[in-house]
Picture 1 (cartoon, one colour):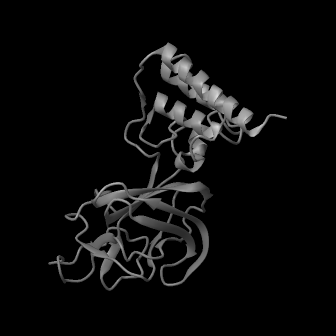
Picture 2 (spheres, rainbow, N blue to C red):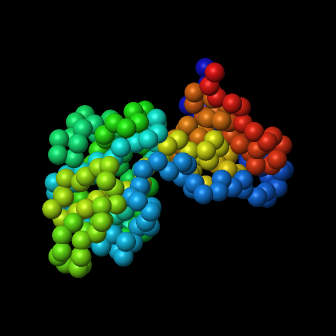
Length: 261
């Protein structure tokens, strides 16, 4: 049996082999996936407004939970963006729950992320695993505590920076702070495009290297979309997937294997 150091050596050797293959291919352009940088957009406020203090003029910061209902149209949920006002190093937790904003049910998924920049920003939350959802069934996005940051939203009352009441931009769901917030700002995404492990809208050598590092145990696999990285549909990312992604970027293969029956 290999020792721990031996296993670590083999992991690093596998990553080195992939890096060598990438270097042999050379610096190659990414394969762009136009219009969906984080995979297929499922739910967002009408018009899909960008996260800014102009579009979302009010906010809530609280020790109590902040909740926003949403109604998925896709059968899976993989990523969520929340429009938050925060500083670098702020930790934010997202729960996806059953039920309604007034009566949230079982927690179906949870993930804590750390913000990297300051200001009003989209904060990306990659769920630990793709969450199977029932199209048309009500779910809830919940931030259980936000005393060190704010969740931005539309105006439901005239106060502070809200000089007028905003139209209902997400009629499918309501927040639990409806006396102040019309809707909290959010976006939800279905499973991303195959190969785009880091969700930047491109299939690139970066995705190949991140997949290899995940397999080798050099990075936390939760930092990438394992569904997207598993391009050969084996059930989990492997070095084969990393090489297939690299070959796809290099133009050596045009398509990934087709998953499903």
